Amino acid sequence: MIWDLHCHLNGVPGRTPDEQMARLIEVADRMHIERLIVFMGSPFSQDPDPAELRRQNDQVLQALSHWHHRAFGFVYLSPAHEQASLDELERCVANGPMVGIKLWVARRCTKSQIDSIIHRAIELEAVIYQHTWLKTTGNLPGESTPADLAALAARHPRARLICGHTGGNWELGLRTVRPYPNISVDLGGGDPLSGIAEMAVREVGADRVLFGSDVAGRSFASQLAKVTGALLEEPVKQAILGQNLKRLLTPMLQRKGVRI
Image 1 (tube, helix red, strand yellow):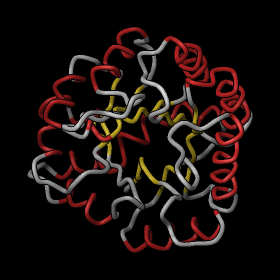
Image 2 (tube, rainbow, N blue to C red):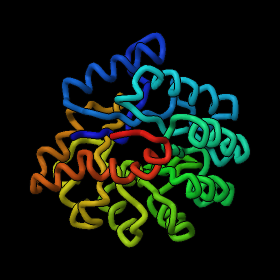
Image 3 (cartoon, rainbow, N blue to C red):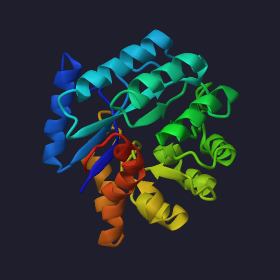
Protein backbone atom coordinates (compact mmCIF):
# COMPACT_ATOMS: atom_id res chain seq x y z
CA MET A 1 0.00 0.00 0.00
CA ILE A 2 1.50 3.32 -1.13
CA TRP A 3 -0.17 6.62 -0.31
CA ASP A 4 1.52 9.76 -1.63
CA LEU A 5 1.11 12.71 0.72
CA HIS A 6 2.36 15.43 -1.62
CA CYS A 7 1.08 15.92 -5.18
CA HIS A 8 0.43 18.99 -7.33
CA LEU A 9 -1.41 19.71 -10.55
CA ASN A 10 1.10 22.38 -11.51
CA GLY A 11 3.59 21.04 -14.06
CA VAL A 12 1.48 18.02 -14.99
CA PRO A 13 0.64 17.89 -18.73
CA GLY A 14 -2.96 18.69 -19.55
CA ARG A 15 -5.21 21.55 -20.61
CA THR A 16 -7.64 21.14 -17.71
CA PRO A 17 -7.55 19.84 -14.13
CA ASP A 18 -9.37 16.72 -15.35
CA GLU A 19 -6.67 15.99 -17.94
CA GLN A 20 -3.91 16.69 -15.43
CA MET A 21 -5.46 14.39 -12.84
CA ALA A 22 -5.92 11.60 -15.37
CA ARG A 23 -2.24 11.89 -16.25
CA LEU A 24 -1.23 11.78 -12.56
CA ILE A 25 -3.26 8.62 -12.05
CA GLU A 26 -1.76 7.04 -15.17
CA VAL A 27 1.79 7.52 -13.89
CA ALA A 28 0.85 6.61 -10.31
CA ASP A 29 -0.53 3.30 -11.58
CA ARG A 30 2.85 2.47 -13.12
CA MET A 31 4.45 3.01 -9.70
CA HIS A 32 1.72 1.07 -7.83
CA ILE A 33 0.63 4.16 -5.86
CA GLU A 34 -2.85 3.57 -4.51
CA ARG A 35 -3.83 7.02 -3.20
CA LEU A 36 -2.74 10.59 -3.90
CA ILE A 37 -3.13 13.76 -1.83
CA VAL A 38 -3.45 16.77 -4.14
CA PHE A 39 -3.18 20.43 -3.23
CA MET A 40 -2.81 23.78 -5.00
CA GLY A 41 -3.76 24.52 -8.58
CA SER A 42 -1.73 26.08 -11.35
CA PRO A 43 0.17 28.21 -11.77
CA PHE A 44 1.55 28.39 -8.25
CA SER A 45 0.86 31.61 -6.37
CA GLN A 46 3.12 32.37 -3.41
CA ASP A 47 0.90 35.09 -1.90
CA PRO A 48 -2.59 34.45 -3.26
CA ASP A 49 -5.47 36.83 -2.64
CA PRO A 50 -8.85 35.36 -1.60
CA ALA A 51 -10.04 35.02 -5.19
CA GLU A 52 -6.88 33.13 -6.16
CA LEU A 53 -7.17 30.80 -3.18
CA ARG A 54 -10.70 29.94 -4.24
CA ARG A 55 -9.68 29.51 -7.89
CA GLN A 56 -6.87 27.12 -7.01
CA ASN A 57 -9.05 25.12 -4.63
CA ASP A 58 -11.71 24.91 -7.34
CA GLN A 59 -9.12 23.40 -9.67
CA VAL A 60 -8.35 20.69 -7.12
CA LEU A 61 -12.04 20.04 -6.47
CA GLN A 62 -12.56 19.57 -10.19
CA ALA A 63 -9.52 17.30 -10.48
CA LEU A 64 -10.87 15.11 -7.67
CA SER A 65 -14.42 15.00 -8.98
CA HIS A 66 -13.95 11.74 -10.92
CA TRP A 67 -11.26 10.25 -8.69
CA HIS A 68 -12.59 10.17 -5.13
CA HIS A 69 -11.72 6.47 -5.00
CA ARG A 70 -8.06 7.28 -5.69
CA ALA A 71 -7.31 10.77 -4.39
CA PHE A 72 -7.98 13.24 -1.60
CA GLY A 73 -7.47 16.99 -1.43
CA PHE A 74 -6.00 19.48 1.04
CA VAL A 75 -7.42 23.02 0.94
CA TYR A 76 -4.92 25.77 0.12
CA LEU A 77 -5.11 28.53 2.76
CA SER A 78 -3.15 31.67 3.64
CA PRO A 79 -2.87 33.36 7.05
CA ALA A 80 -2.53 36.63 5.12
CA HIS A 81 -6.29 36.37 4.51
CA GLU A 82 -7.65 34.98 7.75
CA GLN A 83 -11.42 35.20 7.17
CA ALA A 84 -11.19 34.11 3.53
CA SER A 85 -9.14 31.10 4.63
CA LEU A 86 -11.67 30.19 7.30
CA ASP A 87 -14.41 30.45 4.67
CA GLU A 88 -12.46 28.15 2.32
CA LEU A 89 -11.87 25.72 5.17
CA GLU A 90 -15.62 25.51 5.72
CA ARG A 91 -16.40 25.23 2.01
CA CYS A 92 -13.80 22.64 1.09
CA VAL A 93 -13.33 20.59 4.28
CA ALA A 94 -16.24 21.04 6.71
CA ASN A 95 -18.80 21.03 3.89
CA GLY A 96 -16.74 19.58 1.05
CA PRO A 97 -14.65 16.53 0.18
CA MET A 98 -11.19 17.76 1.21
CA VAL A 99 -9.51 16.20 4.23
CA GLY A 100 -6.64 18.51 5.22
CA ILE A 101 -4.98 21.91 4.95
CA LYS A 102 -2.01 23.15 2.93
CA LEU A 103 -0.07 26.24 4.06
CA TRP A 104 2.75 27.55 1.91
CA VAL A 105 4.90 30.71 1.94
CA ALA A 106 2.54 33.70 2.13
CA ARG A 107 3.14 34.15 5.88
CA ARG A 108 5.32 32.34 8.39
CA CYS A 109 3.42 30.03 10.70
CA THR A 110 4.55 32.05 13.71
CA LYS A 111 2.06 34.81 12.79
CA SER A 112 -0.93 35.09 15.12
CA GLN A 113 -3.38 35.14 12.18
CA ILE A 114 -2.82 31.42 11.75
CA ASP A 115 -4.23 30.53 15.17
CA SER A 116 -7.89 30.74 14.15
CA ILE A 117 -7.17 28.39 11.23
CA ILE A 118 -5.43 25.92 13.53
CA HIS A 119 -8.26 26.04 16.08
CA ARG A 120 -10.85 25.23 13.41
CA ALA A 121 -8.64 22.49 11.96
CA ILE A 122 -8.43 20.86 15.39
CA GLU A 123 -12.23 20.95 15.68
CA LEU A 124 -12.55 19.29 12.28
CA GLU A 125 -9.71 16.80 12.96
CA ALA A 126 -8.04 18.04 9.78
CA VAL A 127 -4.35 17.40 9.14
CA ILE A 128 -2.26 20.54 8.53
CA TYR A 129 0.60 20.43 6.01
CA GLN A 130 3.04 23.32 6.48
CA HIS A 131 5.75 23.88 3.88
CA THR A 132 9.10 24.39 5.63
CA TRP A 133 12.57 25.09 4.33
CA LEU A 134 16.03 26.12 5.46
CA LYS A 135 17.71 27.85 2.51
CA THR A 136 21.44 28.58 2.52
CA THR A 137 20.74 31.76 0.55
CA GLY A 138 17.89 32.81 2.86
CA ASN A 139 14.23 31.96 2.91
CA LEU A 140 11.45 33.83 1.16
CA PRO A 141 9.97 36.58 3.37
CA GLY A 142 6.95 34.48 4.42
CA GLU A 143 8.60 31.05 4.28
CA SER A 144 8.45 28.99 7.47
CA THR A 145 11.31 27.00 8.95
CA PRO A 146 11.12 23.82 11.03
CA ALA A 147 11.73 26.00 14.09
CA ASP A 148 8.65 28.06 13.20
CA LEU A 149 6.60 24.88 12.96
CA ALA A 150 8.01 23.64 16.27
CA ALA A 151 6.80 26.85 17.91
CA LEU A 152 3.36 26.33 16.37
CA ALA A 153 3.28 22.75 17.63
CA ALA A 154 4.11 23.93 21.14
CA ARG A 155 1.26 26.47 21.02
CA HIS A 156 -1.21 23.93 19.62
CA PRO A 157 -0.31 20.47 20.97
CA ARG A 158 -3.63 19.00 19.73
CA ALA A 159 -2.97 20.04 16.12
CA ARG A 160 -1.83 17.28 13.76
CA LEU A 161 0.97 18.94 11.83
CA ILE A 162 3.20 17.83 8.96
CA CYS A 163 6.67 19.32 8.45
CA GLY A 164 6.79 19.77 4.68
CA HIS A 165 10.04 18.65 3.00
CA THR A 166 11.44 17.95 6.51
CA GLY A 167 12.78 21.49 6.24
CA GLY A 168 14.80 20.91 3.07
CA ASN A 169 17.94 20.60 5.17
CA TRP A 170 16.60 17.42 6.68
CA GLU A 171 19.43 16.81 9.15
CA LEU A 172 18.59 20.07 10.93
CA GLY A 173 14.86 19.81 10.29
CA LEU A 174 14.51 16.38 11.88
CA ARG A 175 16.37 17.40 15.02
CA THR A 176 14.32 20.58 15.31
CA VAL A 177 10.89 18.89 15.26
CA ARG A 178 11.96 15.75 17.14
CA PRO A 179 10.58 16.85 20.55
CA TYR A 180 7.05 17.47 19.23
CA PRO A 181 4.98 14.28 18.90
CA ASN A 182 2.21 16.12 17.03
CA ILE A 183 4.56 16.79 14.08
CA SER A 184 5.04 14.18 11.36
CA VAL A 185 7.68 14.66 8.66
CA ASP A 186 7.29 14.61 4.87
CA LEU A 187 10.12 13.06 2.85
CA GLY A 188 8.92 14.65 -0.41
CA GLY A 189 10.85 17.02 -2.63
CA GLY A 190 14.57 17.56 -2.75
CA ASP A 191 17.18 15.28 -4.26
CA PRO A 192 16.81 11.53 -3.66
CA LEU A 193 19.79 11.33 -1.34
CA SER A 194 20.41 8.15 0.61
CA GLY A 195 20.04 8.23 4.37
CA ILE A 196 17.04 10.54 4.79
CA ALA A 197 14.53 7.80 5.63
CA GLU A 198 16.94 6.06 7.98
CA MET A 199 17.70 9.29 9.86
CA ALA A 200 14.02 10.23 10.04
CA VAL A 201 13.19 6.89 11.65
CA ARG A 202 16.09 7.21 14.04
CA GLU A 203 15.27 10.78 15.09
CA VAL A 204 11.47 10.93 15.26
CA GLY A 205 10.35 7.30 15.11
CA ALA A 206 8.94 5.26 12.25
CA ASP A 207 5.33 6.20 13.01
CA ARG A 208 5.97 9.92 12.30
CA VAL A 209 7.56 9.52 8.84
CA LEU A 210 5.43 9.98 5.70
CA PHE A 211 6.15 9.31 2.04
CA GLY A 212 5.49 12.18 -0.32
CA SER A 213 6.81 12.82 -3.83
CA ASP A 214 6.17 16.54 -4.55
CA VAL A 215 5.20 15.50 -8.06
CA ALA A 216 5.34 17.12 -10.63
CA GLY A 217 8.30 19.03 -9.25
CA ARG A 218 9.89 15.66 -8.61
CA SER A 219 9.14 12.21 -9.98
CA PHE A 220 7.33 9.43 -8.18
CA ALA A 221 10.23 7.07 -8.86
CA SER A 222 13.05 9.22 -7.48
CA GLN A 223 11.16 9.94 -4.28
CA LEU A 224 10.03 6.36 -3.76
CA ALA A 225 13.69 5.39 -3.94
CA LYS A 226 14.33 7.27 -0.70
CA VAL A 227 12.20 4.66 1.05
CA THR A 228 12.47 1.52 -1.07
CA GLY A 229 16.27 1.77 -1.15
CA ALA A 230 16.61 2.58 2.56
CA LEU A 231 18.33 0.23 4.99
CA LEU A 232 15.13 -0.36 6.93
CA GLU A 233 13.05 -3.41 7.79
CA GLU A 234 10.15 -4.08 5.42
CA PRO A 235 7.42 -3.35 8.02
CA VAL A 236 8.99 0.06 8.63
CA LYS A 237 9.03 0.81 4.90
CA GLN A 238 5.38 -0.17 4.65
CA ALA A 239 4.50 2.16 7.51
CA ILE A 240 6.26 5.07 5.80
CA LEU A 241 4.86 4.34 2.35
CA GLY A 242 1.23 4.36 3.39
CA GLN A 243 0.15 3.08 6.76
CA ASN A 244 1.18 6.17 8.72
CA LEU A 245 -0.67 8.55 6.42
CA LYS A 246 -3.75 6.34 6.45
CA ARG A 247 -3.76 6.37 10.24
CA LEU A 248 -3.27 10.15 10.34
CA LEU A 249 -6.23 10.71 8.01
CA THR A 250 -8.53 8.08 9.52
CA PRO A 251 -10.40 10.40 11.96
CA MET A 252 -11.28 12.78 9.12
CA LEU A 253 -12.17 9.97 6.72
CA GLN A 254 -14.44 8.43 9.34
CA ARG A 255 -16.18 11.79 9.82
CA LYS A 256 -16.87 11.87 6.11
CA GLY A 257 -17.97 8.24 5.91
CA VAL A 258 -15.12 7.27 3.60
CA ARG A 259 -14.39 3.56 3.53
CA ILE A 260 -10.77 2.53 3.09
